[in-house]
Image 1: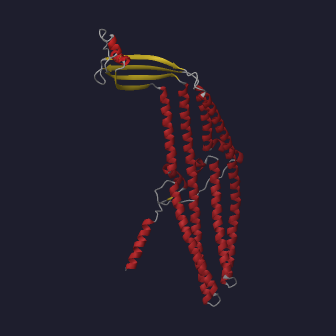
Image 2 (image 1 turned 90 degrees about the horizontal axis):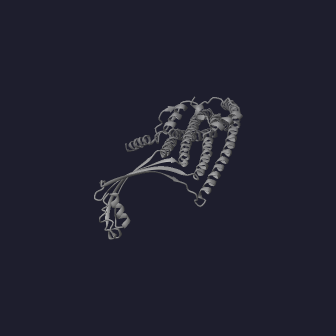
Image 3 (image 1 turned 60 degrees about the vertical axis):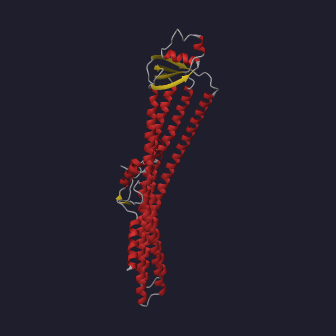
Amino acid sequence: MNDKMVLLVAALLLLCSAPAFGDAVTLREAIGRALENNHLVKAASLERAAAQEEAAASRGRYLPRVYLESGAKLSNTPSTVFMMKLDEARIDPGSDFAGSTLNHPGARGDFRTAVTLEQPLLDFGISTGVDLAAKDAETAAVSLESSRQGTAFRVYLAYLAVRKAAAYRAIADQAVANAREHGRLADVREKDGVGLKSDQLRAITALSEAEQRLISARNDLLLARMRLNLAVGGRQGEALDISEVPVLEEPLLLQGELVALAQKSRPDLRVAEKAVEKGELAVRQAANAYLPTVYAGASYQVNDRDVPLGWDNDSWSIGVNLRWELFDGNRRSHVKEKAELSRQAAAALLENDRREVALQVTESVLRREEAGLKLESARAAVKAAEEGRRLITLRFRNGLSSMVELMDAEAALNGSRANLVEVENGYLGSTGELYYKSGVFLKEVMK
């Protein structure tokens, strides 16, 4: 009874700790979930929103700035005390202009409250700053598109990985069933007196090895499903299954056309282009630092001797100020030269990226052609291995072949089947990679 209870508790714990398999999804559904729930896409989306807020904040520099200030001061400095009285409209001509009062006043306090407005009239640095912030927002939007493309492609690869793991699991299941059948035939032959004990032992060994491979195949399938669930942003610890074999349309464009498409569509190239454009704006901003600025200002203030926000007297002022920095120790010239060098560096990186993209697309085209040829060869190999296994099985049943020959034929068939799965996945993956390297994977897969 105790042993039964231990087994029951162990089974319950195993069930509780096993990941939930969840539902089976199509490739489109999986990618749709990933674009909604994947944390990398969410982070890129939030970064884009933050960049847009920064762009909006930079445009606010065109608008006036209004300050409210309120402060208290205590002093016996002659000029300060005299100005306090003057601002409060408390100057007494009869006593305040006496020499002793002017030169040695007693300590005096003042409460000052002011509303100040500052409005830029001419500041070229604001316009370039706004343009730079807008360019950052554009870069963040392109980075979001790059994250969406990359996430979709990773989901596609994870989807293919589940397909491969499921196929390996099916091959392992079939291998176990075949090994059991071979063991049964070996037992029958041994009982009929035409078999060898070594054949029985060889069949037992083969069955044990097949069962071990099946255990690994089951775990690999579970892990592949969990990785797919992770890629789509599912809940931690769950697994997600696939419901179809993903099929992408055959590319209709030639290699040169695909390269041109990639040069136009690849988000990483567009990010590099934005970096060059930002470099040009930075050069312009550095040049604008040599120009003058003109700001308008206005102020309204009240002063009181006794209480904060009091109203002994009020006053106002309004004016325009031009500021032109004529010399700054050559700092601006060095900043401008740095901006120009950074722009040139960004342009060099962009050119390198363009060449790299062209090479990547060319490689993807060649690898896909290679995968197609391998697929034809792998299918032919499976047919040959199946026919070889069939013939050896007939010979074994008739006592014309040994168990070793049958096991070798079985191993060859399992190997060719596994290779076919690998090659099929490689062909499907190469098609997706070609679209991904061309910058249109998400568009193609979501048709």
